Amino acid sequence: MSVQYEQFTLPGNEAMGMAAIGMAKEFAPNLELGIASYAAVRGERGGFITLGLSAKKLWPMSPIWSLEAGGFVGAGGGRGGYTLSGGGLMLRGHAGLTLELQPLAGLPGRVSLGVSRVSFPNGSIASTQPYVSYELPFQIFNRPGFSATGSETLRGEELARLNPRSHEMGVVFRRYQVASGTLNDTGGPQADFDLLGIEWRASLGPHLYAKMETEGAMGGGATGYMQILGGLGARLPLTNRLTAQASASIGGGGGGGVDTGGGFLLDAGLSMQFDLTPKWYTELALQHIRATSGPFKANSLALLVGYRFGREVGGSDSVVFDPHFLRIRTANQTYLQASDNWRSHNAEQRVQNLGVQIDAFLNPNLYLTGQGLAAWKGDAGAYMTGQVGAGLNWPITRNVALEAEGLFGAAGGGGLRMGTGIVAQINAGAIWQISEAVSLHANLGHLRALNGDFRAHVVGIGLGYRFTGFTSR
Image (cartoon, rainbow, N blue to C red; front, top):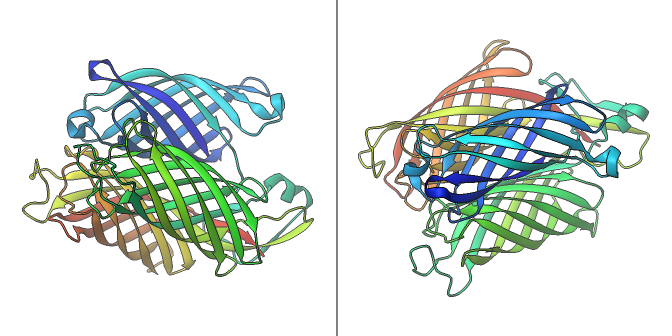
């Protein structure tokens, strides 16, 4: 997990501070591939957010120093619309110097300093700036592909080397009760609104965890609002199934008329987590969020339903792990016009969207999925969607399968007429399994706003990576 800060220079010499949160996997020695999101946290563009794919390569020069270089391809925008970000495509490259903290100060992770170059090729942003980042490594006991045939036992040195940790991924349903007197970005009263999102947690020890979440508005007149937060939490077990938790996060958010100023958000709260099974849990949370440079502030009540894997193993000498199957997909989805008033401008243009999809298989044929996409072409910069749902997989041959899925979530921005932002989507397609881990995906679908004019046929292509994770008994 990594966090990063840099400052883009916009047209007119306007400054926009951008914070990034990302997760990556080392696919080869010193080569990391992953996903990341950038959000405005300083300036006048709260709600300017992008998400996409990242890559980084390290060249060690000593036990503590390395050179690094990498890139990012993503999509998004906001608070300036397609005139600022164009279609939404964001390209970024960087080079810098990395310092390992463990040998030097006994602290986990690494710090990097360097220079980056960012551009929106069909927009008006092109900027070069310094950056600073911090990366916290963690381990997930996993193997490529769905090749596990049963439980596995780790002992001694192998268990110590992997140092398995607990991870949780959940779907969040949230209601913001906005403070009385709070104004939106047009000077009117800010109404309460609802959000839907996904939260990921990684354990840092028996009582501490790091968290990352992304949520989008799906009702209450804030269509297009999105937030991305990262932070720390502490937990205190009360019984075998009930745990009290406290957390604090920072991040970026805005859009949908919600006035977050420069976009920097502070969030803190308390929650109670109840284990339904060793893997599944539900959680009720009370939180408070506020913008540091805008009038937005609200209390929230949230319900979270989640899935846990890679549980803590403490100081055990021998641990038995049971397998579970996960998949990450990168996708491009093309929206084709299916209603007369689907867009407020450029109705004749199709919209290209880049995104990430994460699937958890309950059995070989049924999976749960969380998906996030953003426009990168079609003069719809600032459009984003986040959805959750379920899918079915039917193997046809050893290397070919059919899939169908249904999704529900939030969408807005970019001039697409989403009404209150609540959307539903269906997809069906075929998969070609290139190897045990890597697959190609092609599908057709339909997306519609449940209370707006937007209707679109969807053509999708993607690349999948599947792997087996393990949960301790």
